[in-house]
Length: 98
Image 1 (tube, rainbow, N blue to C red):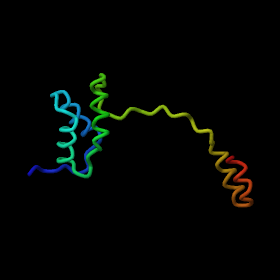
Image 2 (cartoon, rainbow, N blue to C red; image 1 turned 120 degrees about the vertical axis):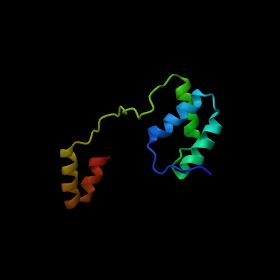
Image 3 (cartoon, rainbow, N blue to C red; image 1 turned 60 degrees about the horizontal axis):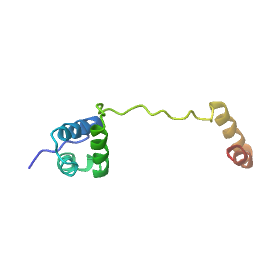
Image 4 (spheres, rainbow, N blue to C red; image 1 turned 90 degrees about the horizontal axis):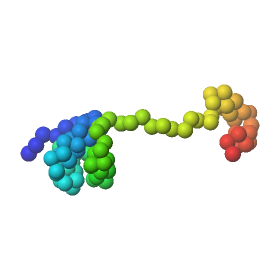
């Protein structure tokens, strides 16, 4: 019986996927080994396959990329106004959000 690893970093599991994929281990076997070692902290088989595909397409980095999210339209001032009006008249809250 192997030891298990509790609370691994996501990049740690991805590095294992990258290593095993480089050694031509099939995704289903990579998933089996990860599940055996990381137990409930393992990623799903679908995510293992996704990472294998990304590494095969040339991805090198095992770390999360920063997401380029659309900036929020809600400013702090608008949030404060909404909270203020919600306390006095909940109908205004609905008007602000729709």
